[in-house]
Picture 1 (cartoon, rainbow, N blue to C red):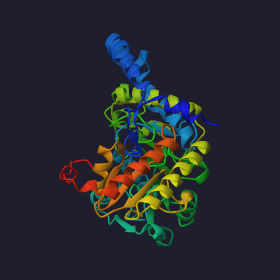
Picture 2: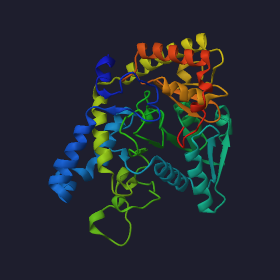
Picture 3: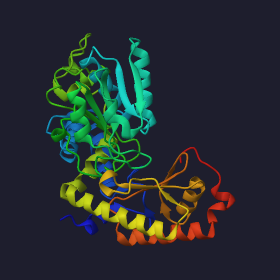
Picture 4: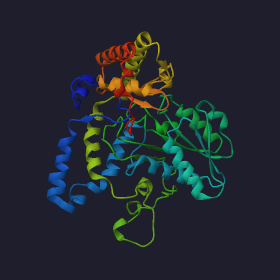
Length: 397
């Protein structure tokens, strides 16, 4: 059983703040500053360019990929890190389309994260061969699968409502129709148990700055199923995805397996932060994490519904049908969330009316939930969210 009191002590959290936004940006693990200091001073400072070999910088994307693989039900040598999540979505989609050349449809759902849809739209337009993106409501995905669809692109957990797709069932249904799958794990990796190999997923991508706590701008990861690894095209043929990058050949030859999905120079400082953050996960049991997440979110829902009738639950009521976040609808959700943040309860807002709260047992406990409910109830009761200072919108909500 995971000791969540012990994991809480591994994070730097401001005094008096209840942080319910780890589904957007994870808090700072206490070990990260020292790891960055060592990278900066002892590696970059003392080793200079030799640190690529002496400190093993060049191998970090693959080595840390293997550590993430354990958290998402993937085998060694199937995950690599680098670049942004949007770039990895593009690579996975392009590779899947090339592997299914007789078909032209990318199928997704209307609740998918806009950036994923933008990448699909851009890729389809660039191909110019009739390729197109089609979207359907989340609950209609299974019935929309057909022999015209080349790729099914889905985010397992909806970023707005926390609604969770059945990855195994939809992947199996897609495969029966000859469709390849690309799953976005941005709100899954580190939030709940994932079994990519068991579900037979073809491609998966995800970020490391949310539940994996690697910091703002931390790199994304990509997974390619072993049976596709030697056939998948990286689409973006960067020099570090070359079979021999330091041979400096004029023509591209893909590296074997997952290494071909590397593109540019890896962000070493962010990878160092991720390495320290991943140490926390060595003692975490994902089943225990999931059970505690459900317990906390159920406690929160009960408390909010009992004290804030003006808030409408937007997340699925059945806990197994949602991820590790709970969302409520409120017409004045942005202002209300700003009032919550000012009171020390940090969640976030998603247009048009979603107040979103994440539950991460690594550093959130029952006392935090109860205090958060009490503070939110007071804000809603006295309507302090109407104050002018809460009406202004920043560029990030």
